Length: 126
Image (cartoon, rainbow, N blue to C red; front, side, top):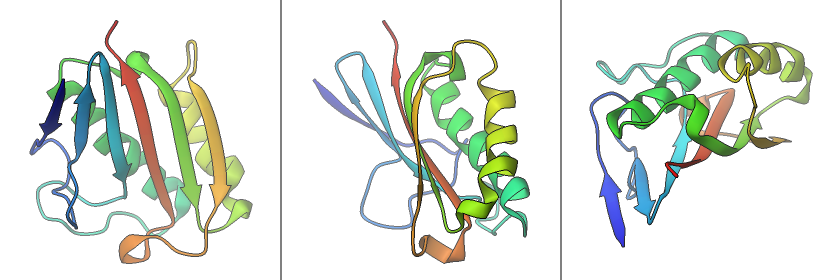
């Protein structure tokens, strides 16, 4: 069973995709960038500031579906500069303090709207 998710607890999609998609008991969340859900404006000028907003957006999608960060089983972090690893990692670690999910952290050439950080997750409600 596939069900597309749309919520105002996270920024609206900036392209032809769903904020998340249910596939059985798994929720596949599209990557979130540091946009304010209410205004659509970019939040933060540093990777650390942006990571805070990105994870708030991720959490907004999860909460809209009755889930929490504790349901996340896999995360992928995209950053435009690997030099930002430590500060993004510190913000990430605070959100996933107990039993953190599997994760990849990769440097990319660019992200939508000039963001420094993007994070996508997969959550399991089982």
